[in-house]
Each structure stands twice: as C-alpha cells, then as structure tokens.
Length: 166
Ligand code: FES
Image (cartoon, rainbow, N blue to C red; front, side, top):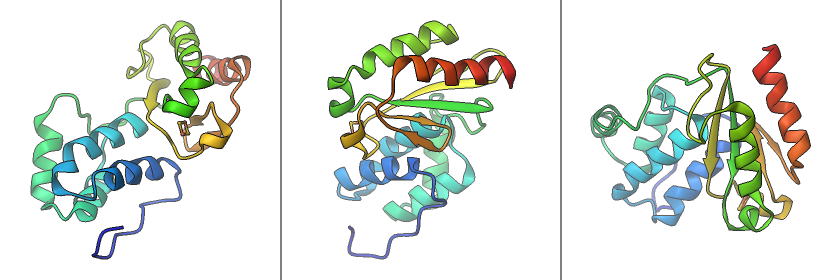
C-alpha cells in the first residue's frame, strides 16, 4: 500500500482487484499510469470517467494527464465495447490449467480474436493477467461475476446465451 490514503474502488466489481494488482506491482509509481490504464481496458473493455479518475487518484497523477494518455493512444476506448464482457484469466496459475484452450474455444465460437467485440455489439472477449483467484484456476469473469474451475463446455454455453439470445 502507498503511504497516502488510497481511494476506495469504484464498485465491488472484482475486476478492480486486477487493476489494483497492476498498481501494486509497480509500487503505485506514477509511471504505472499507462500500464494501469491498459489493465482497465483489458479487464473492462474500455475506460470510463470513473475508471480514469480512480487510477489518477490512486497514482496521484493529475486528472488531465490521465485523460491525456487515455485519449492519445488509439488502443484505449472510452466507450463500452458491447453489452457483455467475457474476461479469461491467462495468468500463470490459469495458464497451467489450460486457460489458452478456453481462449481459443471462445475465439472460435464468437469468431473474434481476444481483445475484440462481436460485430453485433453483444460480446467482448478479453484476457487478464491474474484476477487474484489462482486457487480456483482456470478463472473467468462473466461481466462482473467471477467463475472458477471453468469447464470449456460451461463457458461456451454462457457465451452462446449472450451471443444468441441477448
Ligand atoms: S492466474 Fe488466474 S487467477 Fe491468478
């Protein structure tokens, strides 16, 4: 933890733990700004005002600088990419439990690459590096719900529901 008071995470969404993990690994240094925004982007699929403010405050970076970075790089999107986001953890523990197979099965079913959204705007497929639930690897987040010990068939069923019926 840094020596100054950290702002509380914007919500109970488990993905904020991933974002916090990135900042912690970098010792809450200001130069962690880009990497942290990358983590927000890959976990949530986009950066919104709440996220940018939270990261800026946590790293004690001026808000204008955080917005400057978020709007400068084309990699960052300020709009939600789709209705649902499936984030598959590809951190070491999950990788050992064949998270790569989950990613390729999801890519095949949705006909998109990880990091992209389906053209109808229903599902975005994202990856993350450790969501802090290694004991339950492999892990995925279905929107904000963390699901452990993911079986490929169950994941595909979930994705199909989103892709077809929503
Ligand atoms: S590596 Fe996947 S939860 Fe830690």
